[in-house]
Length: 195
Picture 1 (tube, rainbow, N blue to C red):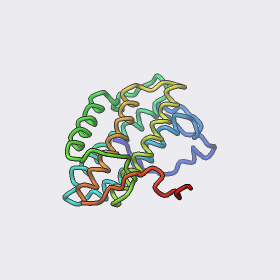
Picture 2 (cartoon, rainbow, N blue to C red):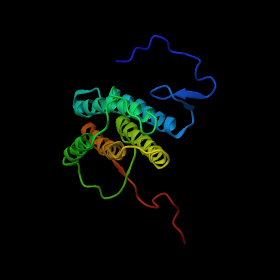
Picture 3 (cartoon, rainbow, N blue to C red):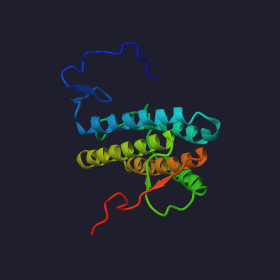
Picture 4 (cartoon, rainbow, N blue to C red):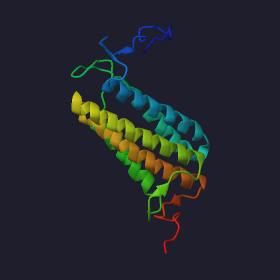
């Protein structure tokens, strides 16, 4: 466990932060941006967990709570300098990815087949799951940039890719469980007719 008895240290005032093991890097380094966006995603998912507190949504909330812990693990994994690991930091494996795929398949079997892309919204939880999905995609892009520069383990990248898919399916499942209408994209629907 981590003990946090002092919140500010002033060690970051010069625009640097410490990675696992103590190496100092700029706060806008690719690695810091990647785990910072994973942290942002975790915050959005925390809001979704809160919105999924009602009994009819408890299965979504329970899965999201597991994901929150795993995102903290991923953040710690990304905070290790390139080529280094720490025995105290769990690693993302393909088993984690497979579990996400199983959740996607299970949730998707109860949903109607899409005839178009969906527009985010319809319920508060649906909308926030879509926001989380978008932040997940941004974090994934940052992780790919980091991978190109310094290397990232493939299962971690796979996890983030699959997580955005899960968040999409969860948004649809939440709408169904809440009885909310899913609004579909109608190409050009709001454009004025041309002569």
